[in-house]
Length: 141
Image (cartoon, rainbow, N blue to C red; front, side):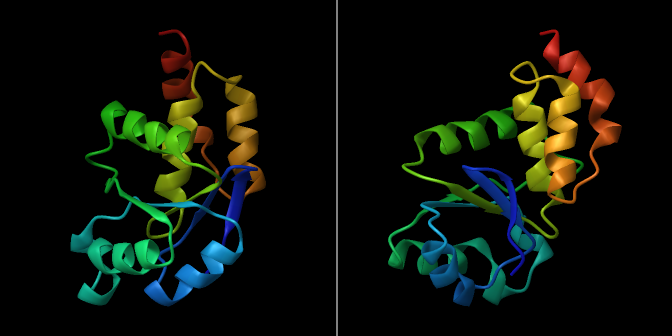
């Protein structure tokens, strides 16, 4: 498991295994968000299996599966609502962490300067410079 810290309260990762849950809890996370559709993973990594492990460890589990084709602002809003409701730091995962970083960027539009949004995820290893036009448009809403 490779945890990439985006902010103090939000980190992302590539696909996790239920066996990773104790380490996620030990790292101080209180909420786990799955951004990966079940169709992309084998049965043993599907969200219901990870949910069981997360909830057994006392973590909140949110299923918000997105693909690049289906990602919309409703999904971004759902992610941020879960983040705001969390009692502590949030850990989100997908195939590589990229979708989780895109969702974070889109949710920050209008809250932070676009350059700062792009630089923040770049420090975690995600190049989201191509989102600039969309972030700028969303910032003007």
